[in-house]
Image 1 (cartoon, rainbow, N blue to C red):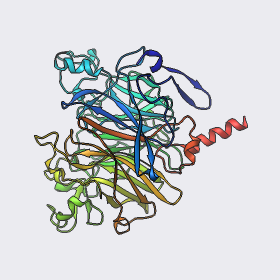
Image 2: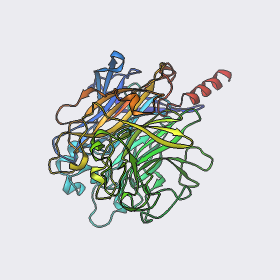
Image 3: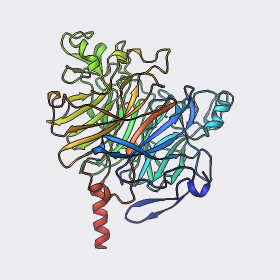
Image 4: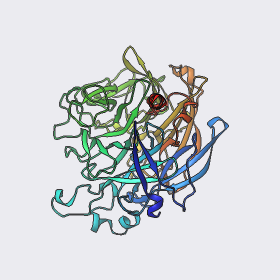
Length: 517
């Protein structure tokens, strides 16, 4: 990709910052995205933990969303050009590569590593200190101790509706020797990024960065405070295992939410969850000062071997847990399971769908066998988020007890990773998700399912089943899924309320101000 095709024109400052992108790469088949289409991102390879180019693939939907046809592809830049960095993904890292639509609907975002894939794979250990891309250091030479290795920044890719790509945000000092997982933005002028670092080193969690920055400001980062230390909203939960950070708007303005999955250590606050992060006035935070963190969904068991878990029945769990109901260790009634939330979608202010990978990080000896993978539906009832049911039919789920075996390509789906959706005029919710595999190189899939917004019990939805829209070929791993960006977000208004972070209300207010000016 040449410098002209990769460049980004200057931001125009008016009522809001609006990113303007250069043209797409001539070698690729996406000249511009089409509103209403789906986009996934993929990585390829044959060796676990190797570097890969990241390719976006666009799908046109048919039969009411029940079929998908590939209509184009776009490979993100593999070479440095001016201020734009190369960007690669790790083949075999199942917890990165989340694809998201910006809050203004005009661009896509994802995170990767600032290195050419072939360059990394040619001499990983001698140059980078490791053969695993995700274990490279993001620290500058001045901040490294011992042997100094080449710094690999964690890079934000901002992809415009016309296929232009901006990779000028290459961050050092975040997600050191670990995975950059997700990035969210309002309009492309600044970003919230989430990922994992080394426990206690301050490089994991949620950070804020301006476009083009090389460093980021901690919002909810891990610290040296021991896990298990009780803390509340004034001292937010440790963020070592933050997963997907999203900007959500359910009608009352943009809100920053993040999913977390980590090992519980006995504190009532130690459990995988989804929580909101706000500044002292309830707005989007730009630093940790005055941060208020409120839990949305969380584990209910807070002590003993089951800390951080939730209780489920045949009506609320997935099929792999049915046989164990009433037989779980430490329980005489329902099964307890651990949450492993990934991406989430608000259909409205009181209804949330959560893609659960079914592979929880909880440190209990039971953790590997006690996930609840699938698509969970949660409802806000009396101020408390309550699990209604878990959709899993058609996923052919397997138990995650065999995860991390010596067969890294073993087939099997334990749950879901990427998620997006829309609310239809007839009260249905159409959702699109990507699979999470038993092992990191398991075959991967893109799914569709339609749910009824008003349903709250599994008996109402027992006939709902996932449709496989796309099966990745051997050597290709699907990561995230999003609707395509469009130049004017008004296009999306016709497609119904319920897009995560679309922020249509804010756009309409800005448009009205312009009309009155």
